[in-house]
Length: 273
Image (cartoon, rainbow, N blue to C red; front, top):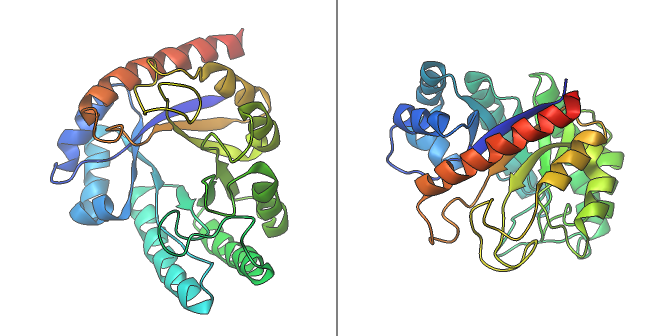
């Protein structure tokens, strides 16, 4: 049975986890993603208590690894991995997000700019990190993002194939660089377990961010295609929930929760019929 889970990228500072999780649950979400600052603000044990109290889940934790700066940044990334694997165990979370380097600002390295040594460091590090994570039944999920080694399908496939670990998956964050979505989905659907789902006023990746149902892009064919290509479990996780400080995150939760639940119900009926 194919499964769709609905996530919300936690944006709140100073909000007690149980209160926020209950509100998101009532909006129709199954769980949340946590970035380092939000995870550390309350601490993993408090989050674990909140998840148990609300029936919600930690769907993904989002550390920042960097394999692009040589042994110094790789060593720092090993320390980050150790912490996040421990936190994932505390939270019963089975997925860690992966960047190969900084996604913006100083030190950004895209697939075309990476040197042979940087590719080698990324591949070797990912093999090592996957093996560590696998011992705890954790997958590492490559976030397809401009300014990384996963900014387009060929580069992402190169990483997947050369790392060659079953617990290395993809967060198919559309659009990929210079690709139509159909090509990206055709290339990466079988390794995709997670999507940071957005919508825009003009078209895919163009214009201001907005609520999923009000945007110009239709997500239903994308999700249908991914599930049709053999994906067994897919998380749709709402990111950038204030749309560049244009909207209240709680209004996004309300509207996008309704939209995603309708989408899930519709596609589940299609799949089972």
